[in-house]
Length: 81
Image 1 (cartoon, one colour):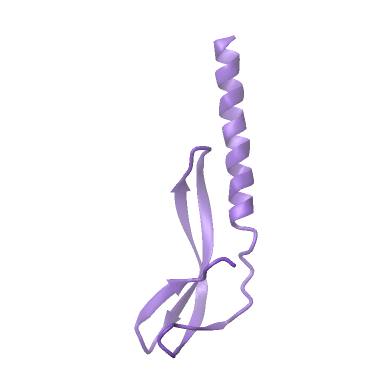
Image 2 (tube, rainbow, N blue to C red; image 1 turned 90 degrees about the vertical axis):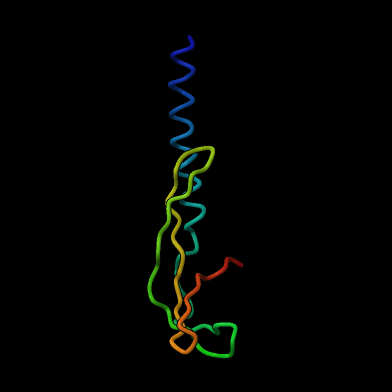
């Protein structure tokens, strides 16, 4: 019985991790090619970057839009609304 429960738990964590990853990456479509950098300049979209995040369900890969301001020489990731 214990082995069956552990097996089911492992599978549920895997499925939960997949669902969480899909939810976190649901808004990876980029609307803005240019965004304000925060210092009055314009930052350009440089592509999507991914990062692995360890959760209680599983390790998931999160993707975010990355912008870079050539005037400030700084980059930032888009924030979720």
